[in-house]
Length: 312
Image (cartoon, rainbow, N blue to C red; front, side, top):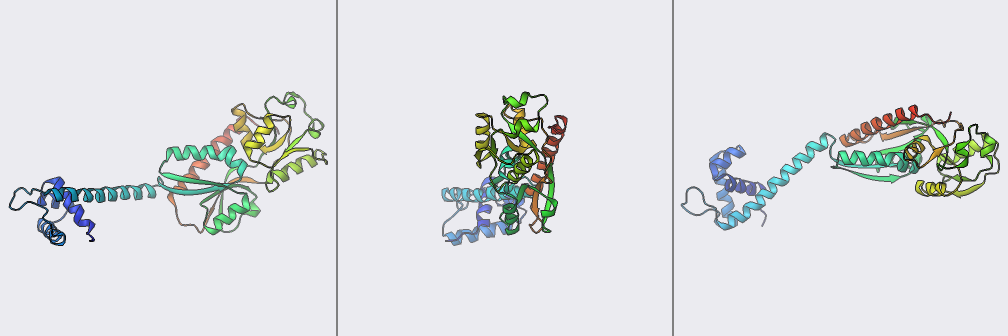
């Protein structure tokens, strides 16, 4: 038997407020219409809901139990209305975010964690992918926000790119590396060091090759290649190897006394870390709020990095 949920809500209002007149006032209905609805419900159920000839209305035990379902419907409706309000304010929803692995793990994930802590009703599904995979995800609608370093010439017409951080790389090493103490570090000093190579599909791999070419290193001595940021860092901590990393990643880890940057200029890539969104995607308040949050946090990070400038 299917019961009109509005009748159950009405029944709960009568029980909770003490009568049909009181329920009518609360619900904005007329008292006769409330009484008719209850009579219709009793006929449909074939069970009396209120004891006969009793004033004020006295609910039967069956009525009291049935009214609980009306309260549940009412509470669910209120929760749904509150969710819609939070959604429209950008305080609830679900976001699919993906980006370049080293940036995501080194810089972006802590920001996403802080954002989600501030807006716990926004669920975040984080993935990984280099720029082409990110662009493909935006085009297919499988991704809400992409975060990746990209050249302006690579930005498709259907994508909005909001710059977050300027492109900046440094030579990274462990805090206690012997070269950190060199007052006048030269390219020759790093030329024959062991190196950690980023994954070949990472733009950092091509940056590494360009840096080594610029200092005359043709025979690259690779002690470790590929892997996640965590595996690269673990290798750095336990060796005298060097690698190329974004300054933002090294800066954050340096503040934790985990990683150092050699005072040797390597040139800046012609890319910016950008938050990427599709122009064709429907308006999504939570996405707009995340973009604002990312822009604010990365702007603050950029200001701090300027105060503690990397090697130039």
